[in-house]
Image 1 (cartoon, one colour):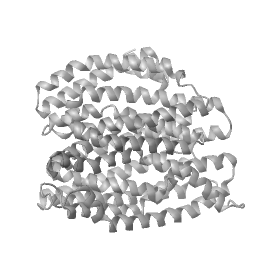
Image 2: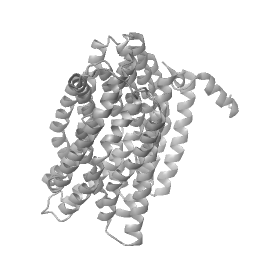
Image 3: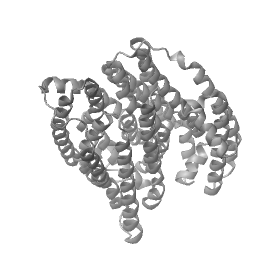
Image 4: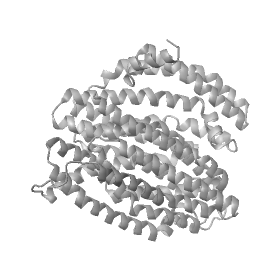
Length: 532
């Protein structure tokens, strides 16, 4: 596998991890200031926003990466230039249209989420307010996403990584400072604070776009002055064919989570809960989902790079190179995500208690354990979808996800009725599981690829994970005898150290660690630390 693939991927991986970590760390003080009952307003605003954002861009940003990679390989830079010139205008207009739809339809969406006649929870007016505040971001984020896709098509991941970090830093700084001033200093309404928090999606996107534009002006991409005949009909037909599956892949996790957000309140109220009680469970599910997606950042980063690289290899009919990309991505994903999943399962209580406090430790810890494996399902889906898109099997990405979504919706209602919030985790496994099985079978058939090639590496990762898990079980049991924040934090800290040491040592002995970093670099680091 080329060093550029790993280097570019790890840039996005590091950035994604930083963004994800910041994205849930700030929630701790934010929830403390606005309260759990008002935090759910934040989720109410973001779920429809993410869906409309994906529709506004029509998957074009990620499709652009695939498109640019293809025509850069062919040396047809005039086609890339035509795409960027006309595409920038198109996504901006669609963004403005989506903004108007969400802003004007805020009251309608709010009525789907909460019962206006039940006064035990948030009001329709408050939900509509925060939805309108987040809608402004739709004007600018599509253009930001498209320019990132253009740069990634040149296999340059650094600008995207830097802009993502800056975007998150600006967003979090404004959220926390603004919330503190509104709630603590001015003793204002938490609803206003949540409204500001959702509006920061617009402000932070502006900051990120400035970074991207600076890079675009500095770098020569070979498209200035590029001339040649362009069939815009053919260009956009091809782009749309690329874009459609990207819409669904980008929407996969948000759609699965949005299904839960929109269904939990109604199902639980039909079961006999009042709105306030249902919203509490809705909040806990949303908070836990923020933790779960942290290890998924690795697979997301790999999938972004993987599409461009597999497309490039596929265009050149380099079968061995395609297999190498798939093997490397799958192995590295499993090396990180499988132990993360096991750790979240065994240390579910310490993780929830340390991150969100012990106010709802029993409920939160139980939900965390049920949701732990979703990281593995999310990650595997990202990788298999990316491979299929690189192999020009876009339609099957759409079909498999649609089938998975139908399974999720059908199973969600009865599972929530039986298991409450935990039912949303089970329906997620069933839905994603069906989609992943379909995609793995297609990759094996169409790509002439054998998943068994990863058997030895996967076996070693499982052995390492089981050994690590066995060492963590006593700590997981001990956590049930303590309820204070300090005790949960200490148990989590000790668990992370034990898990890290055991997994690293076994990964070194089994040589699975060298799938991520070269043996010489590992040995050099150990010598510096006087451990080898």
